[in-house]
Amino acid sequence: MNGLTVLLFLIFVLLVVTLIAGLIILRIAQLKKDKNYPTTKNGQILISIPLTVFAIYILYHLAHNNFTEKPTDKDLIGTYHIVDASGLIPTNLYNSYSLEFKEDSTFTLTRISNINVCENGYYSVDWEFDYNEISFQCGKGFTTAHIDRGFSRFKIEFIIGDPDSGQSIFFSKDK
Image (tube, rainbow, N blue to C red):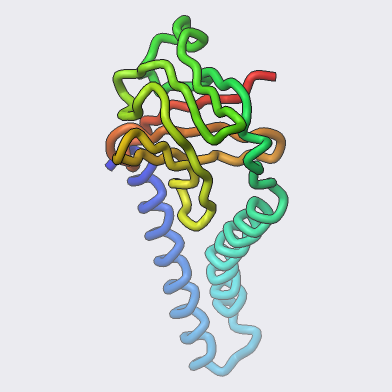
C-alpha cells in the first residue's frame, strides 16, 4: 500500500469513529430526556461531520460523471505525448514518446519499456469497465488503458504495475 491509500484509510476510520461517538452521545442525551442537555448539540455536530463528508463525496462523483464528457471515437483520433510519468521517464524525454490513434481503429505507440503494448495494432473503446476503457489488441493479446476525464480535457493513463502503487504514464492529446 502506498501512503495515499493508508491516509485515506485512516481518514475513513476517523470518520466512522466520529459517527459512532456522535450516535453514542445522542443516545446518552436521549436517555437523560432533557432536550437542552448540552451533549445533544455535541452529538449532532459529531454526526454531521462524517455525513457532510460523505455527501460531498457523492456529489463530487455525480458531478464528475455528469459534467465530464466521455470522448467519442472521433475525439480520440490524433497524436498524444507523455505529460506525466510518475518519475519513470525523465521529463526531457516526454516528447520522444508518442501514441497515435487513427480513424481506422489502429494505433501506433513508441516502444516504452514500462508499458506492455506492441508498437502497432487495433484499439477499441468500451465504457463498461472503469479504468479499462481502451483495449489495445496486439495479435491475440489485449492490454487496457484508462481514460482520465477532467472537466476540460482527458488523458490516456497506462497504470504501471500494482494500481495501488500510484505509478502511471499519462498521455495528453496534442493541440
